[in-house]
Structures are given as C-alpha cells and as structure tokens.
Image (cartoon, one colour):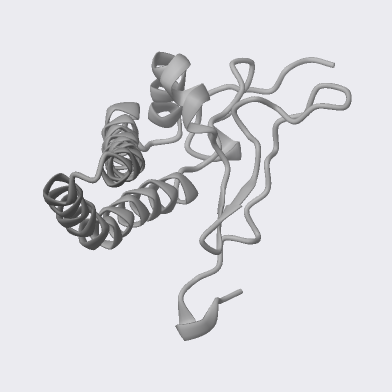
Length: 166
C-alpha cells in the first residue's frame, strides 16, 4: 500500500474502538487530509491530553506526547490567525479607499492602495505558512497509533497480556 512516489500509504489504518451507535468514537474519527488518514481529532487531544499521553505510553510511544501535537496545532492556529488578520486588514483598507475616493482625497487613496498591494503580495507567503503548518500536524497525527481502551491489559504482545475468565 503505497502512494505515488513509493511513500507508504496510511489508508490501511483502521480504528479498533467501537463507535457509539450512529456516531464515530470522539478520539478515533478517520479524516482524509492531504492524502493522509488521521485517526485523532486534535480537539479531543487538546481536551484529553493526559488520557492521550497515557495511551501512547501504554503503546510504547512515550517519546511522542500531546504537547508535540498541541505545539504543531498552535503553530497552525497562529498561521491561520495571521492570514485572516491580513485579509481583514485588506478588506478594511479597500473600504477606506472607497471613502477616500468619494471624498476626492486622491493622495490618501493612493497610499491606501499601496498598503493593500503590499498586503496582497504577503498573502501567498502566509497561505503557504498555513499549509505547511497544517501538513506538519496532519503528518504527525497520521503516524499516531491507536491508544488502547482502559480495560485492555498492558503487554508487549498477546503473550504479555493476562487472560480474563469468561
């Protein structure tokens, strides 16, 4: 199972947690992003960081923690906020240009147009920053293993697990 270029595909990852009737499990909702299947919703990780970290530790992934993912999400959120603020400023300036033109203040209108042009040139870089931050988070999320439910016994494999009487 590989994607173009020979990179491994994550399409085969499946969620082993039983969903609630009619609903996907909140910490295991497969989402397609940039060709990757992410098993975790970053909002669930943010709200349940300790439980997520315990689950990763039980799976032997203690070197990765929720703090790494949350830092990537914070970077993504910051990039989105910066791009949105720039777009909002451009929109506000465009309205001011209209008012300046209506008041026949050509000098003010030209200076506002120059600021809009500078912001317009900045927008592609901000969008690229946002896309890179999102891809970094999605890539890390796609590599996360499922965390075991609380009633699953710890063990390296099936031989390390205890047998429950039925």
